[in-house]
Image (tube, rainbow, N blue to C red; front, top):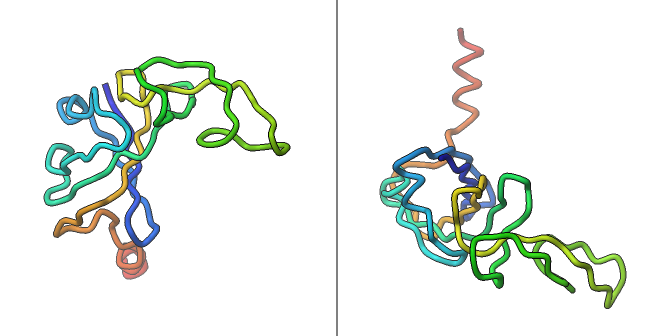
Length: 132
C-alpha cells in the first residue's frame, strides 16, 4: 500500500513524497481535518493538517461525507464542483472523509515547521550541474 503525499507550505510551495508501509499504515483511519505528526511520515519536527485527497479513480474526498466509500451526492457548491449557473444542483460522486486503502493522494498542510526544509533548493542543484 502506498500514498502520494502533497504537502503545502506556508509560502505557497508544495512538495510531493510517496510513502510505503509501515509509514502509510499510520494514516489509515484518519479523517480530514485531523493533525498528523511528521515523525510518523519521516519528517522530523513537522506537524501536518489533512486537508483533502482523492481515490485511485480520481474522485475527491469531501469533509462532510462520513465513511470510506464513494457516495453520489446532490451538491450545490464546495469541493469537486464547478457551478455553471446560480442555484444549479449537480449529482456528483465523492469519497468519504476517512482515509482507507483505495485512497491514492493525500493533501497535507504544514502547521508546525521542522528544522530541515521540505523543498530542496533548485538553484543550487542547477548551479552544480553547470559547473560539471
